[in-house]
Image (cartoon, rainbow, N blue to C red; front, side, top):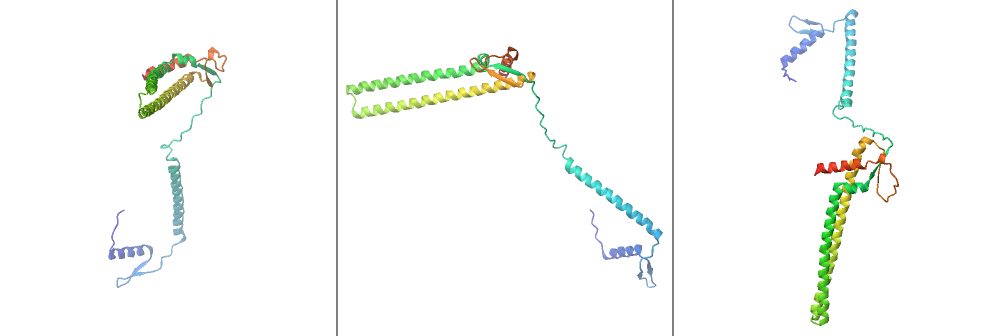
Length: 249
């Protein structure tokens, strides 16, 4: 907004002009302005001003209402385009159908199961050979100690030192064996989890076409005594598992 600096002469002129417009003025012979009381206005002259005043307040009222409406629309609805409320889509109801998956078939023909199983079995056999050799070596050392001790070829200090070494080696062997078993169990548990997750994901993808309400798995010797072949989706799930596995290789 532009600011204007007024000087005293301009202020006097403005005041004089304002008075002249609103009051009857008379200038005397010396040039001084004499301010008289406001001139009398007739009723006919007031009427237009009163009507104008009423129209003015009506216009002001309409503008005020418009401003309020715009304010409400801005703060209540203005962000509708920016933040859309996420409404959860109701889950589609199942058909009530029950389908089955034969886990024995999955374990036998799912490629990932074979790979994980073979890897764990191979590591188990490898560790078994390692600990068998260590156990035999320790037994041989113990036999030599007994022979030397019985023959009296060892001094008491030598016998005590050899016996202490045998005990320490036996303890290390037991600890290493326990750690190896724990590691194999952890790998086995991880493999089961991986296979279960992939089976669950594949079953859900296949069920998108069936829209079954329940999916059961069964194995030989389990509680399920009979499964209608018409509701068996094992082969579909197996194909999906192997297809997805090959895609990730």
